[in-house]
Image (cartoon, rainbow, N blue to C red):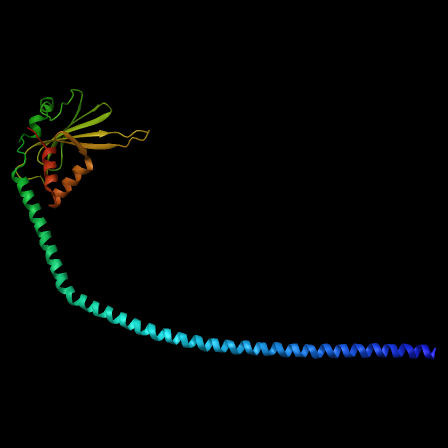
Length: 253
């Protein structure tokens, strides 16, 4: 038994010795590799520092060049701006003068047109409401368009003028013919006039309600007629608008 245990002890001792040697060898190899890895890290770090320093130098050169370029551009802008400022008062004042002169010319032309309109107004009649209150049938026969005998008649004393209105429906359209005396704001010397309008009703199928005024032999939209009236009141009516108002006010008895 002693011999057996000795052999076992010797065998274990040999195994332990071999294991110890292997561990020592592994440790030495690991230390060498770790040291080499550390050297690589130090080399990379050094290279990083060199790249940072090189980048700083490049950035400095770029900044210096950009600074000079920016200064040149800024100087050019300032010089151009000063030149613009130097010329601005003269050109601006001249533009303002030209604009004012142009506006004055337009105003003079409008005033002249209005003056011409005032001197060429439709004379019209000078009868009064009392002259026709019992003779509306006779009055209707002198209208610009034919008024049917079944038209409804409305006699009104309005604010500053008198009016007689004839209304009827024909072919789905509503007609209105107004006889009226001179209205407030109308040109001096203008007499009685007719105004003829026509309304096309809207429908559930999508037809939009529209209103027109008879000007000469043309039916024009109501808004165009109203624009001309407003322009005349404001003293800004064009020659075309003045003519439109003349042609849409028919001479009446």
